[in-house]
Length: 123
Image (tube, helix red, strand yellow):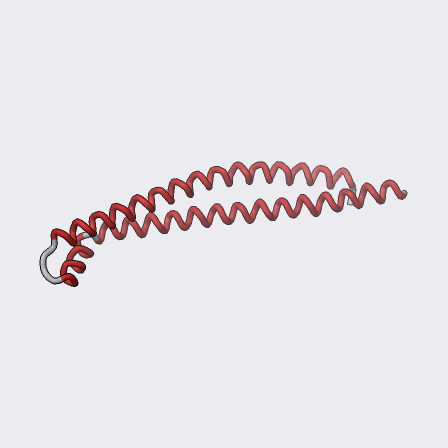
């Protein structure tokens, strides 16, 4: 393999790693926001559930069931927010994996470039 080709490829991989780093930063911000939304939605659900339980009448089990039925929409919202957070965290993990792959390719390229330089000195 030609040393100039390897050097160009390493330059391109460096640019890809820069782009991937910027994307990771964006995804991390989105994941953090999704985590905050999920925590807030869960808190709202738990608060509404407690309020509904206190306001309900009957046995403990009846009050629990009544409170749960009254707050179904809050529970759905909390679960949806938690799912969005999980998706956002997954995107961060995928981006991190991409960055590790690019970094490994850079290391391989550096090794190949060193080999080409050594061969050039020998010839």
